[in-house]
Image (cartoon, rainbow, N blue to C red; front, side, top):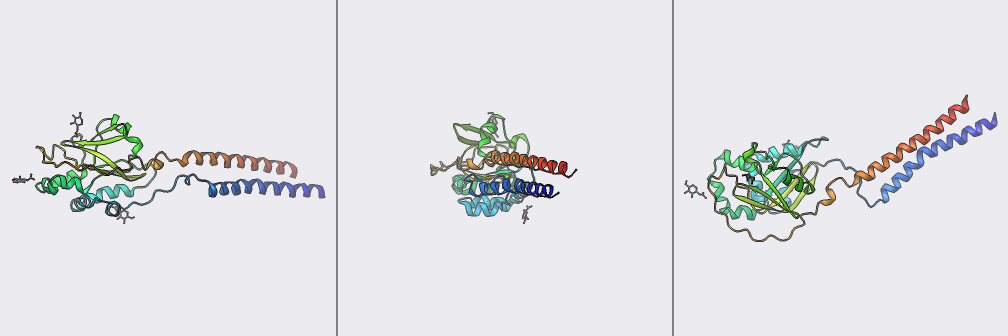
Length: 255
Ligand SMILES: *[C@@H]1O[C@H](CO)[C@@H](O)[C@H](O)[C@H]1NC(C)=O
Ligand SMILES: *[C@@H]1O[C@H](CO)[C@@H](O)[C@H](O)[C@H]1NC(C)=O
Ligand SMILES: *[C@@H]1O[C@H](CO)[C@@H](O)[C@H](O)[C@H]1NC(C)=O
């Protein structure tokens, strides 16, 4: 009788340890791990704030606000549900607007044309930099402006990404932000679709931009925490199996 309860107590202790130890070990491992924490929840990104704080995108932001396109982009950015398509914004730098006559080429556009032009600078899908070679191979990428005529052509020549639309071939000069579901990239040119500009607008040469870390967001691509996360799932499920065996032993002993 006494032996049986002693064995039961030991078994219960073992069970408690089996349940607790892997957790303690796991949390210690996570605390000391140098890898980023797995699968962080998507943060809310305020595009207007990002564009105004991140650098020379004031002209672009001004047009986005004036045309209401900022709301279109933002509502897509707000959808952070799993499987949401996300948004990629191509933000021409202020120097790019200066190159099209300080926006003079844009000043003759109707409100509708200007709005369509701004919609051409966004793709209703999140594209990390690592996806651009595939994007380049898959044909024109449809933009928020809709229709094949407003799709942009993407090229990726040894890591140099260019976005081509009508009269403009813009170089992707830096990654401003890229964490699913929102990507914002800087362009050195304003996109100039032929449907909006029937003749080539005058474009001044753009001064060579400072070298930028185009591949700086690699760490955000392809969820580096995924493998780690998978491994700890496997670990905790094997721990559950261990606890299950102990429970079975206890059940047998009670009979
Ligand atoms: C996006 O979400 C923010 C925060 O929840 C909200 O204030 C804003 O109105 C939303 N914007 C759009 C366009 O849905
Ligand atoms: C704007 O339109 C006016 C009149 O149609 C024209 O003279 C002028 O060259 C145009 N400006 C630009 C930058 O296209
Ligand atoms: C994309 O490239 C194709 C083939 O070169 C060309 O016909 C088309 O006009 C380009 N589209 C744009 C928006 O520039």
